Image 1 (cartoon, rainbow, N blue to C red):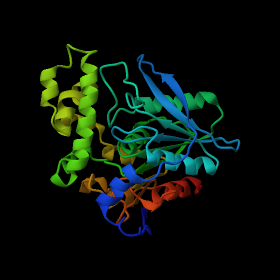
Image 2: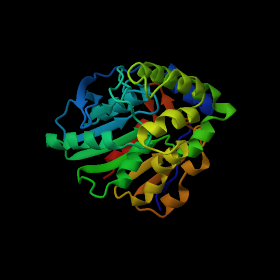
Image 3: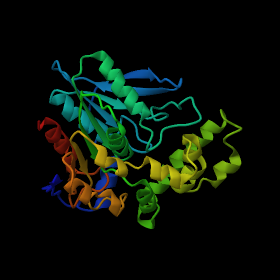
Image 4: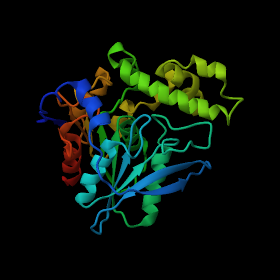
Length: 319
């Protein structure tokens, strides 16, 4: 049932997927947003930093925002979404995944596409405040996969968690990895692997027995990074085991609250399995919108407002 017809029609040249992706990540003017940082100590003695933005209204509504691979809470898409939400009566807490807030995390392991424990911790942290009766989860790319997997794997989802939104989400991780490593995506995959190699190299100084220069030299692609670091650090047999067990696709059928998946058809990061038409058509809770345009987190209307931001607000307000 919930297949959503999209009316998003960007202006030229934003109909080009690569242009909209790169412009939105690198060229969109920065948005003014007040963010207040808080460090949360995790049960395993590691930490994450979260960045708060507050509505001027007294509110019982809060949105948790999760960024994508090697992003942070200062990304333009995070700030754009947060700005629109606080203007409409939400408080916002934007998570920085482990090691993404400008300071390396403490443990050998870091974040990955399927480890929802930190998101679960933040949800519980908000519940303890008692202030918030409406918690909404909004994830971008890798963060969207975490949102969907979290919602689908919870047997006792807190009643305060009302809705989720996943934008430009690789719900099939292996398919998206294979898409990213195609020649058309060379600029993106190269950027990602350079950033990940830098983090690996910094961690080597702290974990010399588990991270070696020999392994570092072998990390020449996203797959090799996942196979040589992400998988063993996360307790997986190999990269393929990691992709299979961390993809949110198998969890969609177990979701019990309304969720919106917004994936553009010209998103070069996504494989065909990332458009779950059959699941959505048979679901009461999974709403799937697949506009023709938008690239990867590039749903440009103007520099102040993106369609993904507007659409997220409308979905959350629709009770």
